[in-house]
Length: 144
Image (cartoon, rainbow, N blue to C red; front, top):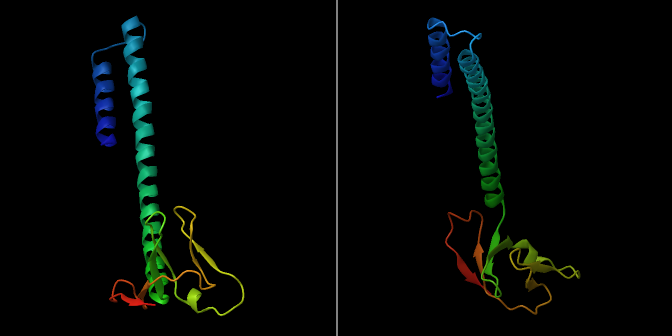
């Protein structure tokens, strides 16, 4: 696209020279100035287009890396799915958090509304949907 613009500007510059439009006349100065500005704009567009293509490739590589990380993370852990009673947001957390027998108090908070959705002191009696191993390949079943 910008190469077409550069070619068109070059054509107009050649046409201007072929018509013997000189910088001596006021009209010639305006035409020459306009063509010079157009040439600078075309060069800037070419540079921006090259930078955009580089940026696009970089973002695609980040997206691929993120996809790989998500796949590895989700396939390595077992997750619990629950829904926030306050806002309805679906929440996923590691099932190992429920198994911790430590005396430290553990609260799971909804990232959407900051409401506590689980405390490991037995005060929350929810039924969670359990996703073993790979979330997309397993059928969920209820667990008390």
